[in-house]
Amino acid sequence: MCLAVPSKIIEINDTLAKVAVDGVVREASLMLLDDAGIGDYVIVHAGFAISKVDEEAALQTIQDMRRILELGGDPA
Image 1 (cartoon, rainbow, N blue to C red):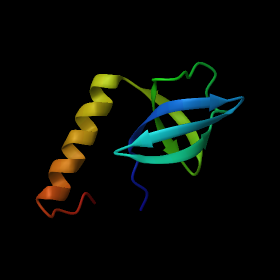
Image 2: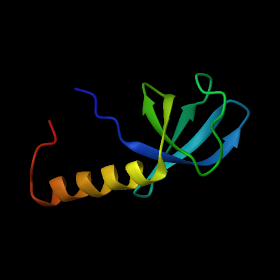
Image 3: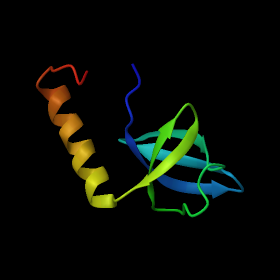
Image 4: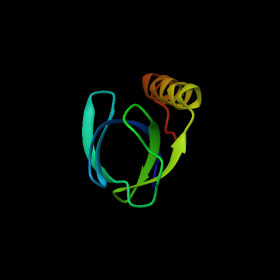
């Protein structure tokens, strides 16, 4: 199963971005998005940012996922 977590772009170098969520930083390709910028939230799948996400929706999703984990639930 694959879980899509909104991640915030914190750095861009050509078509490669550093994205962060809850202190975890990873690299993601921006080759599939033509309008992503620093500060945007994106959904990353298999190392590629595949879509932008509204900041309010991204933060709500992250908060909901934290709550599920705190309750010991399985998000699947």
